[in-house]
Image (cartoon, rainbow, N blue to C red; front, side, top):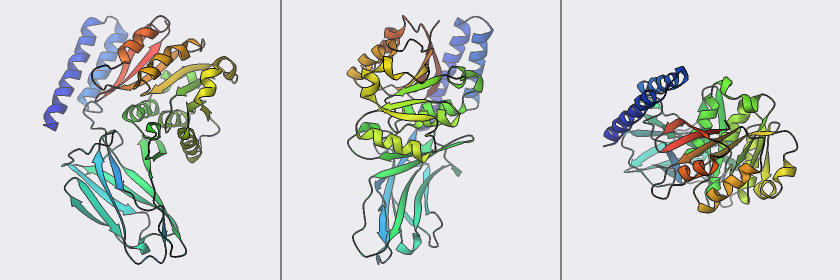
Length: 360
C-alpha cells in the first residue's frame, strides 16, 4: 500500500509538472517545469516519508557510575504528531558514542527495546538511534534519527530522567543539532513544515538568496526550535527569530548550540508584535519566514497584520502542512495577495508545501 501511494503521488506531481508547462508560457516557466520533472525523475523528495525515530522511554540524562543494573530505553517510529506508524522496512541501529560495550536492541512489534551496562557510558556521551532503509542510512527527509545526551555522575542517587531529544540534521555540507523538548508546548517540537523549510533553505541556490544575503535581514515568526533560521544562519544570513513562553528559552539554546549567535537573535514574539515599527532598527527585514503558523485561526488571522507593518518586505517564505478540511493556506495567500500578488510553490514533500510570495 505504501509503495502504491508513493507511486500515485509521484504520478500526480508529474501531471502537475506537465500541466505547469502546458499552461505557462515563456522560457522561465518551461525551465521550472523541466526542473520539477528532473527532481521527480530522480525521486528526490516527492515520495519521502517524513517519519522520525522518537524515544518512548528515553535514557536518563544522568546515571550513577555505581549503577548495578543496565540502563534501558525504548523508541519507535512515528509521524510528526507522535502517532506510531508501521515501519516494516525501517531498521534502527542504536549505539552509545565511544561505548566499550555494545547496545542490546530487541524489536517488539513497532517498538525497539534497548539496554547497555552502565560501564558503556563515559563522562558525557550520546545515545544515538539511526534509522536505516533498504540497507542505507536514512536522511532527514526520509526517517529522522534521534539522540540523547547522558552524563555520568558520582554517587548512588536516583538517575535523573530526561524529556528532551536531539535531532541531527544534515543537508549537504550543512549540519545542525536541534534540541526538542517533550511537553505541553507544541512549539518545542520539530514539525514537518519546519524540517522541510530547513532542508529547502539549506540547499537553495545562492542566487535565490539575494534579499537576505545582500545586506538584508530575515525575520521568522513562530520559530519553535528554530531549524529554518539555523539553516539560514549556516548560509551566512542574519535575522531575528521569534517565539514566546518557554519555547523562547529552547530557541536560545539551539542558537547557542549551533554557534549562530553572531547572526541571529531570539526575540520575544510579543515585543515584535507590539513594537514592530520600533524594533526593526538594525536593518530592513526583507524576508519573512514562517513554518506551520496557520494551525490556528487566531495565528492565521494575525499574519496579514504583521506583514502590513513591515513595508520593506520583498518576500514571504511560508511552509505549511495540509491538515484536511478547514485548511487555511489558500485563504492566507488570498489575504496577502493585494501586496504580494505573486505566489509560487517551490517545494512539495508529501503533504507539506513551501510557498514563496513576492511583491510584483
